[in-house]
Image 1 (cartoon, rainbow, N blue to C red):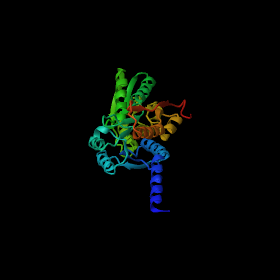
Image 2: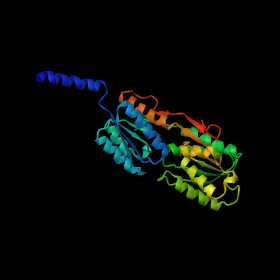
Image 3: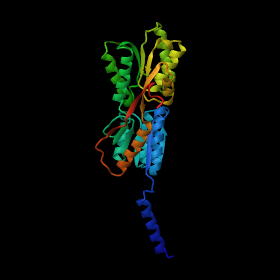
Length: 306
């Protein structure tokens, strides 16, 4: 075989490789919240779908350091990745998003917030989830009593949950928000929520002085449950709700104790839909809907085994 024929074969093989999509797209997934079970679930689902699509994915966890996300985005831009996925408040990483925009690299939020520099954000409807659980609490306590709230305003998808719960409780004149707690989430939020709930219980020792605990996600609800159990106050009927319906929360709901309800986010759906959204962008599609909601379901003792 002569050199010209060899070159022709090589060129043909290269074109075939491009046509088949065998040259892998590269995608960076960047989050400071990989310690959160929910984040782990949808990152796993994203990478599974990305594997089906033949992509190379680099998952980067900054270990709770939000500021570090900016430099990791800038690193990804320098590496000339095809797309970036973030799970963080976009308002806090604007410099990184600007660098990606200038390089023409699309950035998609995976349960992040909305921002003009994001091509899309795939998430659950936090407004609807918070409305379901806060209304559940209000109804269960008959529209009267002291409620402890666990919130996390620094992260937009969770911040909106607290804002909606605030509105629901404010609509009931006989409901008093006894405490609005922002726990340390470096370990997911259980340990500090437990400690803070212990202090609240100690400051309100009378039976019936706390009617409910509303948590913007499951970890604080689980920490509060532990504190209530350890204080010997489980029989007071303190109603606890969370959001995410992670395995620990489902077990607690199934046990029939104080933890009564949570909302199941479709973490696998969020991850897979984020990957599909990235694929649409890489194919050149102009997205009309840039905030993409994945359906949720309220979990109680009635359907926790489903």
